[in-house]
Length: 221
Image (cartoon, rainbow, N blue to C red):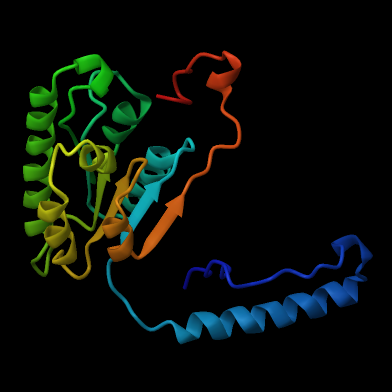
């Protein structure tokens, strides 16, 4: 059985680790392991979850793509739909092609300030959402087509009203029980956050672009 992650409920000792003797450190780790084992044992639900990566910091899509590769590495089927980004040749697009477990769909026409065409953007989002619904429905059987869906920048599409929250929420709430769905993009709607199981708000502390450093292939795209 794989090791379980530490709980976010754990509060580390305020005493400096360097101030502990080896025996004290070992005793502290024994106690921590007992607490962690008891916490893991208390969790009994087994179902797919909805994850939301939002906030103004870098890494929302990057984290979701890492999740996709992790799932593919475990032999799980993954669907990725990019709702906004679409015109650049990206490192992730090339990487996904190396995984037969991943189906990658680019429905976006590029950043909204590049397309400058609201109706074109709406049509692109609509294409992506229709494919997302197909992926969700095909995952209801005992042999689901997908175990994880990544809906990249869906939050942006919702924020710009390219698609209605009233249309999206019921589909997500009625997803197949074992299907996992990861949604990215800043400005996640409160209603979406409310139904999600795991929400990460990525806060920007510093960004290289603000210091005049251009976006790098393999780092930003």
